[in-house]
Image (cartoon, rainbow, N blue to C red; front, top):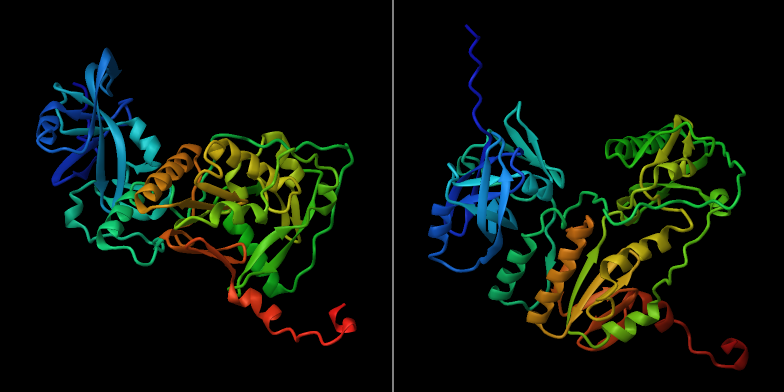
Length: 426
């Protein structure tokens, strides 16, 4: 007699579609996400979702090896806790459960499943942990652990509601976690075979401890890795305005050998031309923009840096490389090329959406967020300003068609004594 296998409960999670609460099966063996025909009929009583009647029969294999046929696909907006997505589901009359979240949604949402511990989390916010795949109403109300984007002044209640609903659809894009673009992998081209090798800078024990803390963080995030490259550049600390520091690598010797990209760079003057007449602004800042661009495997050796405790190299484009700004500009041209200057101004890692009305601005912002998501890029929620009538950008204030210097920037000019003779004027 064969030994009986222990019973393993399926992995489920609760989600909300409008006022309807449903238990969804998480099935990575299913290629697609599916909703039952009976639930679809209940949803049809309301409005607000797109139904696509398929011209040809679509077939998918489930985890148990059986095939299902679909003739309809619907796009649904749903929530798991405070997170929300708009995602397509096939409709099946033979589905034995209410909802299946398939491999397509698991990949799209960056869901991380720990079946052994009966937990899930999301790679864009690993501090959010959903336990036991139970009804989340039995768990405390979990709010985002990061600072939410700042909404503009003078917005009414309805406008705030519209914006909050929009922003909630992009938890994997508006996050302090690093993204990784799927559009390019940068290859560093070197003009000479000369090997550049530098000695590490020396630091007192407290500063060395601080430097090692940065390295530990970069290693844990997969941004860098230990290296045996023949190349090496020295790493050092740069103070930040908040009193903390960031690690930078002195790539001056490597930069002399790096072949630059032929990409036009943005200018401050062009901002005046395009932003000066708008009435609604949103400011988005890419999270460590360079570190969202993966490097070609052969290029990583050129980014190697050395400290007194070891040698490391970057898996992603590092800050300080001469071609970095041009590589980023090239990437953002691929993402936004056809909408640049129409309603989006791009200046290195800063994105400014500009519009002439609130309704227009919501549409423009959605297009930009969709493109960021499709490109695998993330923006900082803490630095994000949404639908504001004014914006401080590049040392200037843009407000209601007017441009002025930020007061702190103009103070040295305003306080400079008036020249009384030609000598003082020169």
